[in-house]
Length: 376
Ligand SMILES: [Zn+2]
Image: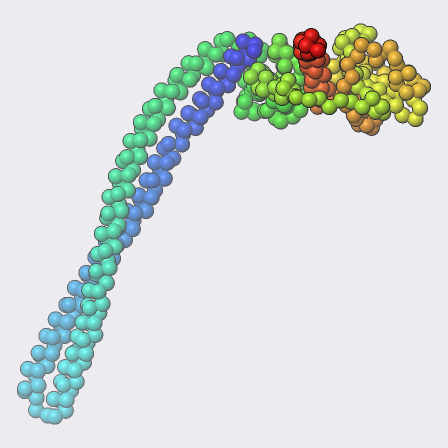
């Protein structure tokens, strides 16, 4: 891995951590404020309950005064009744006394109602008071926690900022500028490549771009999101393992209408894959450069089937598995897609593995046969 890439990865980690800490520090007072708001609600509830108790008490006092007043009137009427001269006067006083007694009885009912309500009111006040007490204790605890957390975060933040500055000095200026520009808009400035895809934007890389990243010799940017690309070497090894350990290889059919070959040399193109297709008494040939997938030269068409039309291309070539329709291949244009190259690479790998296994197995076979022959 390039040192600049390693430094960018460290820088990205520092940037991420700094952002996280900043967000956390901003979030802590909000939590305290939310609890404080709840506390204010409980306080208001308590005040309301206490006010209700007070107003009930005032009402009761008023009622008691009214009863005293009525009793006073009654005793006054009784005194007067002893001195009345006529029956009418006596009846009138009696009516006044009955009216006052009825008033007293109604007021006494109201007082009884208030007394019953007073128990419920007292419970309301008690509940609100204990809730307030619990919330007050909680908010103090939360505030203290927030204070401690903020102090810890601030310390970490200062450390990460120091690290970030240090990582930045290790990165080439233009690269750093590009990273920071993209990072500002997209949140990250460097992305891993996995399965030939940029993990930052999930877009498939062009074969040339992918190969440049894989070679690890230069800084490569994603064409679609502009992030700096890198490949985790450990990931690559894992990806290739199944190919190396493939137990048996499917063998291409000798009379198939399409045949793929690998050649280590082809004109000026170097290593290539050749694709021959028989169709309507003619054979076509396509040539692809194996690393980039780029087509070398035009499609060549000759009379007859490909074995007779292109014998010079087939000798010393490794036959591979591959079958794509002419329409598909036309759709590729001048560049075979990565998935096609990968399939051919894997088959080439398997073919070579098979060839090595076959050549190393031969002397052993002789050794096994030799003692048997000696014994007979
Ligand atoms: Zn991308």
